[in-house]
Each structure stands twice: as structure tokens, then as C-alpha cells.
Image 1: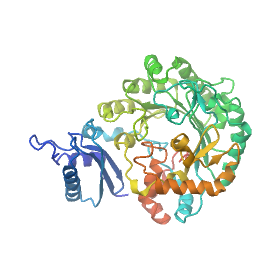
Image 2 (image 1 turned 120 degrees about the horizontal axis):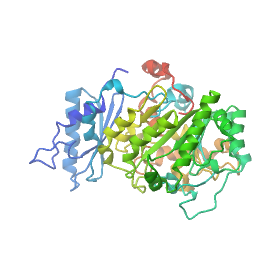
Image 3 (image 1 turned 180 degrees about the vertical axis):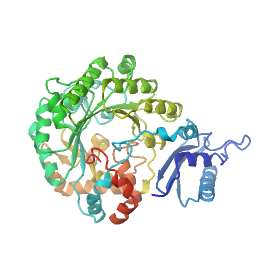
Image 4 (image 1 turned 60 degrees about the vertical axis):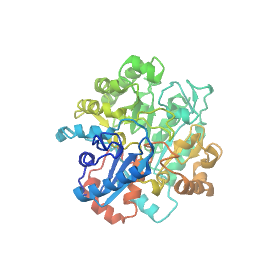
Length: 488
């Protein structure tokens, strides 16, 4: 694509617009924190602003008009939208973008796994079927096989999803019957699901038949992956893990034992690091293609640990560390940072500097700078047709957010009681998908920066174009096929 406007270009131009709430001291809308987020999708630009303290509609509308007029004039932009959120009085990450303009672009880290984007470009056959209005099979399922955990992470969305185990009042953990897990794998493969990630509200390594389940996935040639807290790893079963999974990711959101205890609430950091090192060592010994990574969720309590963890990941021999903002509910129940990222964008760049040919530190910049806003709001959510959420209890939902939110409205069925294929073919499944598209406000009812976010942006802005035009417009991008292409 020829469109080359960056978030930095926009931030610079927005400095020229005065905030009418501060007429006497000539404060611009970036420095006052009025601008909360910037979203760019090709030639579509979305600016998120907040109301002022007095909730003045006139001043806010004036800011909107000035933004559109200025960007049209200075950058020749035509597709501009400005959305409004309530006043917070917090700092905005956007002001820090200007400091990033001095960063050497040659040092930009390559995201070989496309983690800060999506992979629908390599599944355009399914996109075309969606365009025709067909009842498509999902490309991917995030699937739990146990509903409890042995950690109590402070940022855990599983708490919102009503998980059991450590840190909750529900101590009895439910493990999905093994026959139901295997049947779901088989059904998914048969109807056209191209990958399953063992990611749910709980810790899936707790399942008593965990390694047997991994081997079954390999036997049917299913693209399978695992996200884990890294505590339970049988060193006699490392080959099973490496031979069965496309990728293995440990969520470790601390770089010191003190912070680990504060964030994860168990004294298990040394064990987790030892498990990661052992798996990485065995990977090299058997020349496995399984990718091993760390994931860090940034909260208010671990920002100082980003660089130490980047160093630890390199020392452990894992392939990557991905650093992402904390997802949260629409009403901020997990108290995720808003504005605090402004203080650590330079820390993000320092962490990225640990990258080399064998190790990548990848920052989800887009999600860190979008203000948690979904710039396709009126389009709704179509991404759940491509990515589903399956609870460790067997309950199937459009996505994990609904595991315990308005559950009765959005449950599609239970794979223990009925096969996944039967549920997918049922009227109930498609009734729920229709309700998600038409009656859910993605900026008020959903979690911020959700699993379907990147897919939704693509469908909203490019989804109505012909497949031939998409292939033509994105030829250079499509030619650079990323790793793990089925994990969209």
C-alpha cells in the first residue's frame, strides 16, 4: 500500500490544535491529554479524544471539527473519524509518540510471527466465503481443557471468566473429559478449523491426561499450541511437548522474584525459568521446530521489570518475549494502566534492543497506543466467526469475554453434552453469532484490545473489497508469509 502516514506524523500535526478548555495558556490537545488514542488502517485515520472536565459538548465538537479540518488540509487525509470518550484526567500515551520520532528506524524489530497484527491474508478463501454470507467454520479456537489454575495473577481475565482454583472461592477444578477434548479436536479438524490454542480461563497443564491429549493432536495432524504459566512441566515428557505443539508460550510477567510474587502470587519464578531453560535446551538437542516464548502482560506493578525480563528470556534460550498491554473489561475491573504507558515507551525500546537473530523482543505497539479504542465500532464484531472461545467447562462462546458475562445470552452449547460439529451446525450457534454482530457495542460491552480486534479491523476496512483487489493491494505483504500462519 502507498499510504505512509504514521502515528508520529499525526501526533505532530495534532500539536497545532489548541485545546479550548485552556484558552488563556495556549495548550494543545496532545499535551493536555485530550487525545487518548490514534488508530491508522491504511488511509483510514481514527482519533480518540475525551470530553473535558465540565463535559462541554460545544468544546468537544469544536475540537472534532478542528482535527478533521487540520488533517485534511495539512496531510490531505479524507477518511478521518473522531470518536469521543468520557473525561479521565489521565495522561495519554500519544504525547510520548513525539519522543519516539527520534528513534533510529533502522533498529526496528521484525515481528516474524505477526503478533501485532493478524494472518487473514493467508486465509482469503475463508474470507471470501464470509463475504458471500456463508456459514463458515472458524479458523481458530482458543480452547480450555481445565477451568482452574495454580496461580493467582493480578491481571487474570480468568477471574472475570469465573475460573476456579488458587485465588478464588471455587477450589474444585473441573477437567473436561478426555473423550470430549479429543472429539472436539477431531470435529474441528473435519469442519475446517486450522488451529487450536490451548488457552482458556484456567491452566491446561493441570489436566490429568494433558500429555495424552497433546499426542492425539499430533496424531491427527492438528496445528496445536499452548499458553501456560510454566509451573507444571514433566521433564520426561519434553519431547511430547516439542513434537506436538507449533508453539509453547509461558506467561511470566515479572523480571524479579519480588515482582513475580506480587503479580503471580506464588513463589515459583525459579521453577518456571528452569522449565523454560530445560525445554529450550531439549529443543536444540532434537532440532525441534516448536517455537518457545515468554509473554509479559504489563500492569501498574511490573513496568520496571520489562527490561530485566527481556534479559532473562535471552538467558533462558527462548525464541521471543512478547510484551502486551493488559486487556480489561469495559468498566476497568482489572484496573489496567491508562496513561501510564506514557512513562515507559522508552523502556519498551530498551527491551527491544535485546533482540538478535535468535531472540526477538516484540512490543505490541498498536495496542499500547490505541487508547483501548476500537475504531470500527459501528461495524460490530464479525471476528468471532473466525476465532472462537471454548471454556474448560466445555461451554462454547463467541469469545472468552462471555464465559461469565451475560452467559445465558451468548452460550452456544457444551462440547461435553453435544459434539462441536453439532453445535456449529445448530441454529443456536448462528443466532448467537448474529446477536454478536448486531447488538453488541464493541467499545462498551467488550474487553479492550480483544482477541478478535485485529481481525475485525481487517474485515471492517478491507472486508468489502474483492479478493483479487486485496491480493493486488497487499501483494508484497502476502509474499512474506509469517511463521505459524494458521494461528490467525
